[in-house]
Length: 477
Image 1: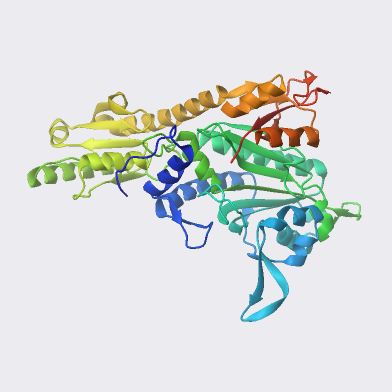
Image 2: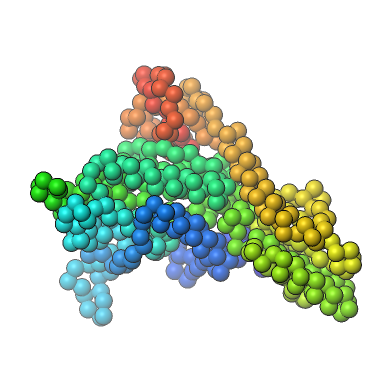
């Protein structure tokens, strides 16, 4: 890692994003085009995301399992919409062990088909329902235009797959998990999201309907950050997932699937990052507090390092790191940890040791404004309070930014102008023709139809037809 300056977000947001990932040692490019290597710092952030989500999944009754990486091609072909939707993205294995395979195997792009096959074996009676399973896995989608974390050939995610006795139970599950994602995004990642339904055009291939959490990035583009799908009985009928009900009648199950991937790391980077580097929310940051010792000679070094051990002990309940690299200057270290987005930095010099005081600096408030001198006796309490405040401040700032870049578009001209500087919120007749025109003319897509509709009617922003539906339109990653 070097202390070279980042390209600023205003200069080139895309370059800024790519540079920040490399300089903060989050990930690197793999030798296979379109793939990435997630480095330890990036993986530590993903592990914290996993922990926060996994806790929520288990609290809602879900269990983890693991399913195969390879799926018979015939499985994908059983659900027509599904195979059509994923065909351009499939990686297919035709040879194994030096011989041509009798049936090609698909490297999983998602696991509805293989899991549907297994559920058809496991589910026999209403007593077996509901089945609530999640898996943490890697998947492969042959993307042509890739970007680290946001869109790569191989990525990591969790995918939940559930089976239910009734349509209402499946819908309840679909919405429950969407709101689990919303709670995680807001309270762990400090990212404000808008929940809603995907349009017919934008929904998951093979789903009855899809729900999404949409977040606004620092360049005002939208990022689909987590999705939850009500699959109806489409996959149950394709894979013969049936059960005997209480009247001994054979019924098809109702199934769901939902997922959140490593692209959420990209969401964190682009929502909170600044021109100095990452700004990580304390609840997910791999390192919450970094201690930087400052000294000029051997005598000072011994006293300062001894004092930092006292600080480390006091902060044992936090994710804390002591930067004891002797070969680097304090200034280099400050820049390094700012680049990595560590929420709090504690500086310990000879004068601080003598006075039993510390200098504490918060990452989200640059310069002298974000620094203060505290008594050692207040350290634990102060760090705890500051981390909570930083978490809340990041959410407040991101929410204010988002809300100031969403525009009510009354006319088509309004919409065209709005999506150049943020999101448009407009009446829409829900026709595919109007949706396609918006995309063709502006490159903006329908992000979601939010749950909160005021039930008033207005004119479709494209064709003028009366409608009571409003939707968000934006350019997106």
